[in-house]
Length: 619
Image 1 (tube, rainbow, N blue to C red):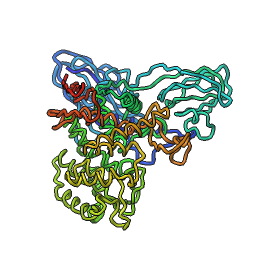
Image 2: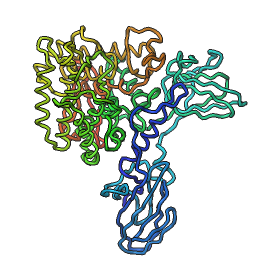
Image 3: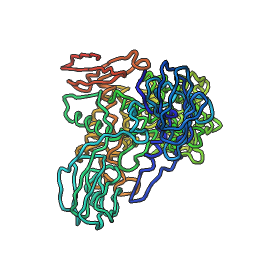
Image 4: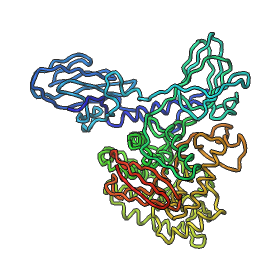
């Protein structure tokens, strides 16, 4: 018999912790809930299974809510021993929870809560429950996410701005505790930069404390902590103990430092779910998460965080708005689900989320225009990137994403969208392809014939165009300095993927050195949300109209982990779950390099190149 675990209605663990996560943002001492719908777990759940025992036994059902046990049509209380005579039995546990979400735990010789149980939310068919291996202890309920903690100490302390500033040496996420000998007021400011921590007006995270002698502050991001008085301060680093199965080193120490900084950035943002950044939003965004799925697959062997993130983003039907209200982010969730399946081979998960994925797709399709194009409807946000894109009507980048959605739904669930995809491709080529400019224009109705990089990058990445047109796009758009440059690591990652695919490795190395390396030159200990090398001083920290709102630890900056694993080490699946895969190391990057890529189920591929001689092994 398997080990007993806490069980719940499938998906509610993720939805509950997403609800908590999205309630924690606090800017300038003001609570800041997200601007999109946040679903809630079911408050009423039935759990059921059958079992048999050849000897008299005792069972006790522990729960996170109120309710009762129905054993062989007789009702019993929770948290009480129930004597069960030998025989065949049916058990149902009926739970209601108004403050958490319904979970139960039973551990007896003949009956344990595990994956074999079924549940419904008091209506509908019973389906297999959800559970996590981490929750096997009756005292540690799924209502508390299982982080680990390490004590951390500042590397320096000095007087500054009528107070004391503590420098912890690098970007961190954790819990600060303050002890004072009196109850006088203490002002606290966090900063990803020293300038932010010293700014009494613009510092994003700050606290004014009074009335106690000891305070434990909410978990948050910081490198610097400023206190208005010299008091005792302690801090704990809060993290998930995720181990790196992926690795990379080469004969270029700057690239090694970039890889290490990207991995550290990614670990900081790998929490209940893949976050955008640890300071400002601490939210789950579909576009950011899509890239994290790629990076995580080349860094971690365990992909549970990817599944949790997909479930959090899918939420619960019926859908009345796009993921994060952003049209492209809904499409990334569907595309990301397919790519997760292809890398993992996890058909069970894909089948579990099928109703939600298909309902999200139907919602997407319901908001297309009469020509079958993605358009901006009331309440929708057409994002793509923070860039100069002509959004005077349906834009090309969104249509190529839609085309890829059709392809992914067919691959995932056998949905027949061939006619839709073919019609859409004909429409895109007719309306958006500009032969004279050698690329796709943003918008066909504005008359501007404006070209940005974004649609053209997607056309290469998703094999929307053939090799000849990909080469034309690369020369006329991606290698054309008159086309507005990308300034976010987010879309720069996509661009570098396209350049790698087209064999432009010199350009890729130049960007890694100047863009990611440029942040390190400015003292970055984690990768930023955006980087413009023309900025000076504290200009680098400003965004969204605020002096320090730019995230200096953003998950979408970790793309080099994927790029070096996929295109330098050259490891990638050719069938779902790496049942078959190829290893094509690329000696155009470095003379000497080595690294590892996790390929699932504990397997790792090791690649090494020494003076052009390649060795590959799997363990």
